[in-house]
Length: 84
Image (cartoon, rainbow, N blue to C red):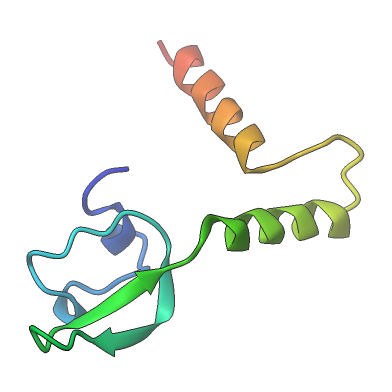
């Protein structure tokens, strides 16, 4: 993931996070104050939260094929190879 991708997609605001903080996933909506540094930070969603959301979305739109987060990974990789 690009270092500033979460900022550019609006998941996080630079003003809310310390400069040393490096996001690495999807952040939760709640902030917490670090006990040692006093800085505002966020925890990240566990991977199962995203997996359940994708599974439910696939079920809701009644897609007949199996689809998961891993399916998106392969679709994206195929897309990158097509652009070569």
